[in-house]
Structures are given as structure tokens and as C-alpha cells.
Image (cartoon, rainbow, N blue to C red; front, side, top):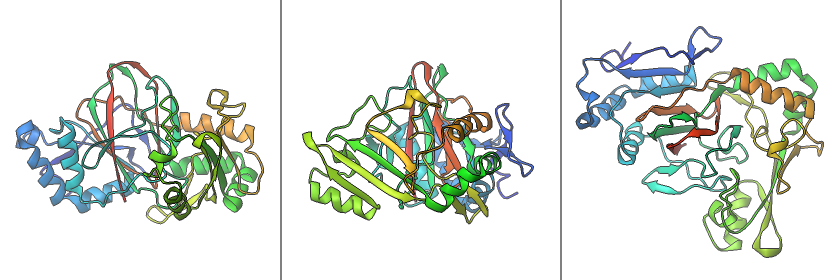
Length: 334
């Protein structure tokens, strides 16, 4: 294995079998005698990434996610350097639904909604055609309790949902889904989908916002008080991932559905329906939420952790923070 000089794969108790004889996610640490395990040797980690990028990309494609643990990444600047070392083009958050702030270079805050709230499972920006293919997460401050970022292999959710609710899944595959949301002009920090239209479309000009939304297949209907109704879709709820040759549960159903199976998520300013106009099945969604919870992996963060996620293969979420602090940052890549 070409990684042997720098990287060592380890096992953690939270990992789960991926169905192909490996554990999910892959977890890499430095070889114990490697001299870049100190902060002063961050450049060694960068050079190792560049030297073994083909192997790391292959591992990401096979396993869906890689957790880098024990490497000398201690600051936002360090994290930005690691993202740059991989050389993936940056994906911009135009049309994004979550309140976020740029920190440095390619590094942004993760969802700025109150950290004691759950963020349900989703593929990043699954509601627009130009979604990122890869996500980097970085733990700058580790929680004392709670605040994990659970991940789950999307094809497993698709397979289990198709087995349990074949008619519901067939409708999703045929018709897709329509996402509707009312945005104010300013961010609503209390909501995990609280991005205002000025932030989402990176402009204060309504015409520019309309043009940018149209490129993403979203229609804007202007309302009173400078707010807007966004209607996106129908867009696919299931995709075929060419890399893994599998169908995936590529959608934001879990974090858009606020019906009886998930009443705490009810928001009169946000809704989702099947592309033919039918509502989502409450029974199917109850099973979907249960399956996501059963199949996910939630590894407690440690300071300096970097997690690389294949957004085409893996859904992610956020558990409520129990004991602060917690600072996890993100970078999106094409």
C-alpha cells in the first residue's frame, strides 16, 4: 500500500461494516515514527497528502469518508492549508439554506443554528444541481459531550427504504421532490435552514438573486416584508452514483419533513412534496428517520480531527451539543 510510509489505518469502536468487507468510515493516523506528528511539521502532512492523493481519493471512493486523526492540524489556517493540499476546486455556497460565515480562505462556519438543536440527515445542497462532491470538516474545539457529526452510507438507506416502502421509493424515483421555503432578507439564526435570500444568493439585488436562483432551477416569488418564497424542483430524490455503481438516497427529505413522524421539525415556512404534488408518506418517513438513526456512525470529535466526506455517497447530520465548547468548521469542494 502506497500509504505505508505516512498513514496507518486504525479501528474505532463506533465504526460499522460497510457491506463490502470494510469498516465505515476509514480512519487514518500518522505512522508512529513519522516526524510530521508535531505542529511544526504540518508541511509534512501536506506533502504526504500530495504524494498519496491518488490513493486517498481511491480510499474515499471505496469507503465514503475518511477521518484523519492525530495529525498536526490545530488552527483555521492549518485546516485551510490541508484543504488546499488536496487540490480540489472550491464549491461555492450559492443558494445554500444554512446560515454560514466565511472565516478564512476556503473555510466557513458550519451551520450557525443553535448547537443544542439536532440537524437531520442530508446530502449537502441536494436541492440544487451544482452541489459539492466533497466536504471537509475540521474540529477546532472538541465538545465535552454531544455535538457529533453522524454520517451514513446513502446506498444503504436507499436499499432499506426500497425494501420497506417500494411504492413510495418508486414515486420518488419517477417524480422527484419539490422543496418550498420562505426566506426573509436577513439570516434567521434560530433555524438550521435560516439563511436569508441576500446571504443565500450573495446579493442585495432582487434581479441578481432571481438570475442566480434560476440557474439552480429555483423560482423566486416575492412576498411582503422583503421576503421571498423559493420553489425548487422537481429535483431527483434518488441518484445513481457512477463511482460506486449504486443508487443513493440523495435528498434532504429528513431535514425538510415536519410531519407527524418528526413534529419538532414543523416549520410553516418550509415544506417538501413529491414532484407530482403528493405529500410525503408519514409512515415511510417514520421508517426513513429510524433507519438513518440505526445505520449511522457517530464518532465523538477530537481536537484536530479532519473528516473528508464523499457527498455523493454519504449523508451527514449534527447531534445536539450537550457540554460546550464546540467549533467545527467546513470547506466545500467540487
